[in-house]
Each structure stands twice: as C-alpha cells, then as structure tokens.
Image (cartoon, rainbow over the protein chains, first blue to last red):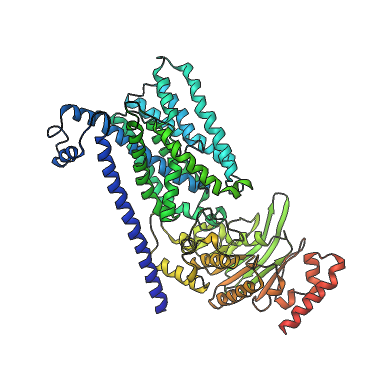
Amino acid sequence: MVGKVVEAQASIARGSADQYGQRWLLVTLIAALVLAMLAASGMGAVHVPVWLLAKSLLRGRSFSSGPLTEDQRIILLTIRLPRIAAAVLVGGALAVSGLLFQGLFRNPLADPYIIGSSGGAVLGASIGVFLLPPVSIAGFGTTALLAFAGATASITLVYWLAHVDGRTPVVALLLAGFAVSTMLSYSSYFLEVLDRDFGTGLRVLTSWLHGTISQPTWPQLAIVSAMLAIGLAGAVPLARRLNTLALGEEYATHLGISVQKTRVAVIVIGSILTGAAVALGGLIGFAGLIIPHILRMVLGPDHVRLLPATALAGALFLLIADTVARTAIAPAEMPVGVLTAFIGGPFFLYLLRRAKHEVMT
Amino acid sequence: MMPLLEFTSVGFAYGERNVVGDLNARVFSNECIAVVGRNGAGKTTLLRLAAGTLTPGCGKVQLQRRDLRSLKQREIAQSIAFVPQNVDVPFPFTVEQFVEQGRTPFLRTFGGLNATDREAIERALELTDTASLRSRVFNQLSGGERQRVKIALGLAQQPKLLLLDEPMQHLDIGRQFEMVDLIASLRREGIAILASMHDLSLIEGAFSSVWLLSPNETMRQGSPEEMLRPDLLETAFDCPPRHRPKLVERTRNQMERTL
C-alpha cells in the first residue's frame, strides 16, 4: 500500500517534471515570438532600428511622440505591424488546425492545404470578395464567414470520401484531398466572370491562390483575432478527446467519447481556424503539417501538451517565413506560400517516404 | 446474490444474419467465464453487447439490474472495461499515456488526471507487470507486451467486469501461460472476467465456467469439465467427420491433464 502511494507520488512528480519541460518550451517560444516581432518590425524598405522601437514601446506612448520619426511611425502603424500581426495570426491558426485535422484523420500527414480545407475556404472567400468589397468591415466579415463555410464543406466531403472502416488510409486521404482542393481552388477562377469592377477581385483572388499575406486593416485583424480566439478556446476541450480517438473508434466509443460529436466539433473548430487563416493569407501550404510534426518529436503525441506549443510555434514560423518573403528579394516580394512550399514540400515528401509501407498497402 | 451482468432474451442481427439469438445468461462478481465457439459464432458480438457498444435488437442487457440502454457509455465504462482484439495507434504514444486513456470515463471536460487517477494507473501497471514498460512506445512493443498493456488500460478503469476479446491471440506458448496467470491473479483481485477464447486447452484451471456458442442452438453454460466434451465440441465447432477422432483424443488428453 505504501509502495503504491509512493509510486503514485513518483508518477505525479514525473508528470510535473514533464510539465516543467513543457513550460520551459512555452516560455522560450513566447520569448522568441516577441523578439521575432520586434526584429520583423525593424526590417523592410524603411529601416527602423530595433532599439528605438523597444525604447518607444517601453515609454508606452503608442509611438505618438518619442524617438521615432513621423515616417517611421506611419510605416510601423499602417503597414508593418498589421502585417506582422497577420502573419502571427495566420501561422497560429494554420498550425492548430493542422494539429486538429491530424488527430481527426488519425493521420500525421493531414494539413489544411493538403486535405482541401484551404481550397474550400478560398472558394468561399472569393465568393465573398466578388459579392461585397472586402475593405469594408461587413465585407471582410462576410468573406471570413464564407471562408469558414467553404472549409467546413470541403473537409466534410474529404472526410466522407477518405474514411474507410474507422481509418483514413494515406492514399485515400491524399487523393481525396488533392481532387477536392484542386477542384475548389480552380473553381474560384470561374468567379472572374462575376467580377464587376474588372480586376480588383481577380487581383485579390490571385494573391490568395499564391498564398500572399495581404496588407490587412486593423478591423480585419480584429475579426481574424476573434476567430482565432474562438478556435483556440474550442480546441482545448477537444485535445484530450483526440488522444482517446487515436486509440480507434471502438476504444473511444467504449470509453465514453462520442465519436460523432467529436468529429463534428473538430471539423467546425478546424474550419474556423482555416477560414481565419485563408481570409488573411490565402493558400499557404504545409505550415499546418510541419509545426505539429516537429513538436510531436519534442513533446510526444499528447494533443493537450501539443496545443499551446503548436499555436506559438506556428505563429513564430510563419512570421519568420513572411518576413523573409517580403525582404529577401526586396524591392520585390515573394508570396509566403511559395516559401512554405519550398520548405514544406520536401518535408512532406520525406514523411511520405517514411510512411511508404502504409501507402503501398 | 445480485448478478453483475445479466442477459435477458438477447438477440442481435447484423442485417439479415442472426448472430446472437435468445441469449439468457448471468455473470456474477466471482466468475471467470470463457466464451467458446467457432469463427463467426458471435463471441465478439456478445462481448460488445456486454460493453454496451452494441445495442441488442431484442431483449436487454443489465448491469446490476440497470438496463445498459438507460446508462451513458461513460457510466458503463466506469464498471465495465472492454479490451478489443486489435488496436492501431497512429501516433507514438508511450505505454503510460496509453494506459492513462483508461481514466477517460472519470475525467471532466476541462479536468486533468488527479491523484486518484494516478493511483489507478499505477495499480494497473503493477497488476499487469508493465510498469517497467511505461516509457516505451506502444507501437514498438511485442505482441505479448501489447496484450498486457491493453489489459492495463482496462484495469485503469477500475472495472468490476473485464471483457477480453481473444486475449491469447498471436501469443507464443510462454506468453499464453503468462496470460493465464494474469487472468487468475485478476480473478483474485475480485474482478469478474468474460473472455472469448480460441485455444480450448488453456481454459481449464484458469476459468470457472464456459459459455459454448453453437450455430442455431441456444448457448450452453457449465463448468469447463461439462462443456469441453467431445460430443458438444463436435457440433459446436462443426468438425469435418474425418478429424473427429482427433478432437476426441485432444479433449481426452485435456481431461487427463487436469486430473
């Protein structure tokens, strides 16, 4: 009896040692994210020295007076900071929706881009853009909502197509995802014919299909932040269920998890996050694949532990990628989707190669 | 004495095919029952009906006089643990994380594992002798280790009744005997066991009674000595006529061994 209690205590202690390691990782990620945001706001065509920025931040006068020049101030507030905020939001949303979809499909190769959820969101968002001017708050709200609806519809379709006997074979997932994703994102071009002001909508659409993080306004960022907050709050109670679902539907059902309800909840929450990401950044591939995967190598597969780290690491990853994309070949700018494809594509192929025995059977 | 689990005129069909028909049986808390029958005779179906994951087409299954249909799956899982035959885990969960899942029916939506949960997990690892495996990845375990870890997950539910679906499958002879010992020790812990069994030679000694499923007949129940008789097994397993002498010989050997 005593031995049992001691062992239980030892196990609790071990649990807290793990938690200590996890907390350390979270603190590191937060610090890295803050530093990256500072550094990124200094980088670009107009150089803003980081120390000046830090100084004016510390004085807490919202840049209105202080060491920064008027030009620097305007650039920071209207261009650079919104862009940085957008990259952070998009990255966090993509990584968390990737984590949720991987748990749902019980397949570490799932990603909102690969499985067609982003494609559906782009189609939905394009409909929004061609109906209402995206610059207005109502317009952007509609766009984001339609992006969410498109993501939900496409992921439901892919799930229905690829789910066989409680499993999602890699081949079925990839084929269904590819077909749905291609079909939907190219159908967006069809909407060109509806374009009334010749070009604006098309330009937005093209940048979406390339995965460019647009120059958002603060109200737009507020809408996306709200979506991200809802998505993250919804993901918290789902994380533990995804752990149980990983044992298979039979086990999960027996242990009292409602598989059907969990599935619907994951699809809705994952689509809110995908919709949020697409509304600002369009088709950005692989971020939702790489980030959860790398963190799983560090923290293990427990979704509860992965969730906060995934959100932070996703934000950090996309902020760095977007900053490189807008500064590396200045004055030209490369869509960040191109960059993530460069990094994520080979990573995906490597994972596919490792999963080969499963793909071939 | 109140039965732990009671089947009353239970019938179940997959589409047109009747798998279980008019089943009447009781499980008491001190029992260890082997469910025996040919492939497709409905052994796994019977276990799923007992676990509440399948609902009977007619009749009812009761847990301590309460119809399983009136209970939430979560409530059932607090008393009955089901250990399925095959598990396929797509992520590299450790043994400890795997066994922790057994506490799912006790957790609240936002709650984590508390000291009681931890204790149940430790006890389950200890009983199945898997504490030394706790940091290993479940997918990388051998067949025998996996089987024990799966049972540990079931024991973490602190069940009154443990349902085992083919616990001896894919185990070598040594691991089979280990499993027999484990089942005997769980019985001593006061956990009732209902297990579907393929290998008849492992039943005697470990199990207190046998449920024999035969096609188109009502299920027979009795002690292992009563049930493992050549004439009964012959019809239940529908042995080809030229192999009948072998069946007689096998069961006779078995009887002699236990004497």
